[in-house]
Length: 304
Image 1 (spheres, rainbow, N blue to C red):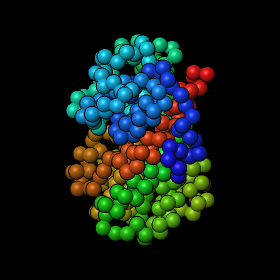
Image 2: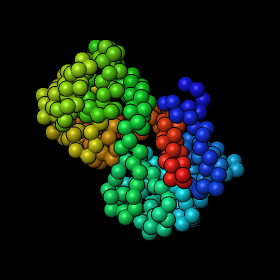
Image 3: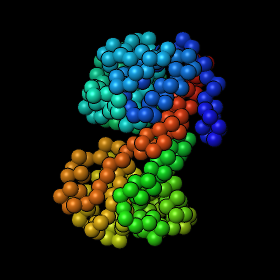
Image 4: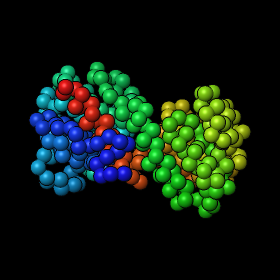
């Protein structure tokens, strides 16, 4: 892949001279987004990056209360969005970032507000958000570094080859489909469960065992690895964990899982890992550029 090019979309064509953007919190992907926006001539207000120097022209590190909201053309929140209590995760700050709706209400109608996913806090806000991972092109492209991360985690946290392992996938969406294809190609015995019959049919079409989520407890006893991609439905419940065999490795990819999942896994001595931001760990440059392309295009469209 050519430098500054992701999925056939060039990062070079956008000119944001005179635009003002705020990048608030996040991981290394947000840093890549900030870099790309700054390269296009925009002034970038950074919040939650105080552990980095970032002295290049175009950057201004500010406190969340000091962002000039009224003058912004875009605000970019992390992939994980804003929690139900207004908290924003940041990998480069010891400070707890918290968004107050009164701050966000100061932005003008022209300001585009980006978030990776939809959350309860966003729903209660009176502002309109652009949810990047609801766009098929972004979610499909992002599934590639996600699945590379899944493979990396399985190798790190299990003592058997992926080839021949029994891997259970709950959720057959864009990440689940890519994971099923890759793991099946590596020789794993993949079983995929979904709440949607059409997704089950698609999984069977690519050659993996598939069924509905109601079959979960029946499938768990044979699983070496369980990967969940379904958010907000308490799939990895205490009851489901009671059907898990000794030595199983559970990867939770859904954002904002219930806190009791970790506690339940510890009580049952289950190897459980929450990894909702895998692309930011294994391929932040690629994952960040995927997001930057979409953001730059939408800012550019707004200005036309």
